[in-house]
Length: 284
Image (cartoon, rainbow, N blue to C red; front, top):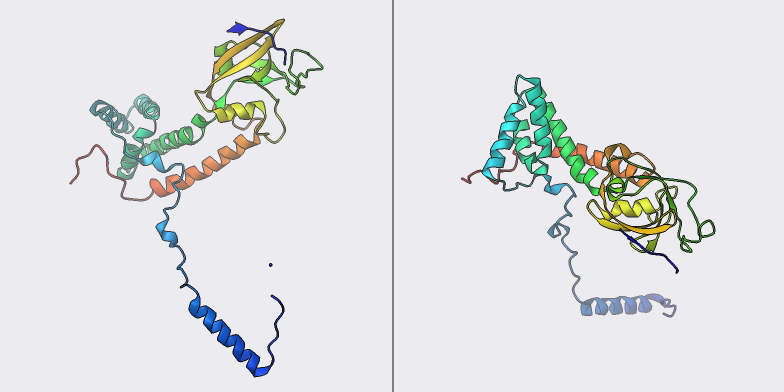
């Protein structure tokens, strides 16, 4: 953290009787004879369709023997007579990430145990949503006060910028970890003036810019704190699930689209037979 201060398209033609018509037909025939042969239309089937954003989720991933044994053991424990063992196995499988999805698919198709199939469906759903939604939107973790602060209200706010008043800091979020405090005023993002949020999820607003930066991105915020101007580096974290239907119409629409895609993915990839071969299994 360091402290500094800011200063800144012929002519018309008409056929004359039969002779004129014959002349037209003759000229047309000559033009056709000289024209190059028509090219066949491109074969649409030769162009591969674009991959869907979830196409990778059932790709086989080479994993260690130890990890494979653990995953297979947890899958087996989903059928345990003990409730606590089933719960623990579900949690461990969820923590494995999408690399376990091919093994879960085979287990789902092989099992006739209703609870096992329900647990696998729930795990697969959570892994899908995490990969396609929750891990893709960054989150700072503050509540912004209204109205925003202008240069006329505080000369330290650059002209054209809007000072964003930090009304609250979400516990455990990136902002808290970086040291932002309630009452701070954010005036710059990576050296550029910030704008507060707008109705409709304006792509140029502060929270939308941060959301698109991505989880793990490091941003530098310039803030006013009492009489000081400070720079704070913040490592953005994933947006908590409970914040997806708040404030941003773009996020709410994204969530609806991903949940719709999840239903298609589950139906096409888990309900159909012939699962992909295991990359770890010996080939015939």
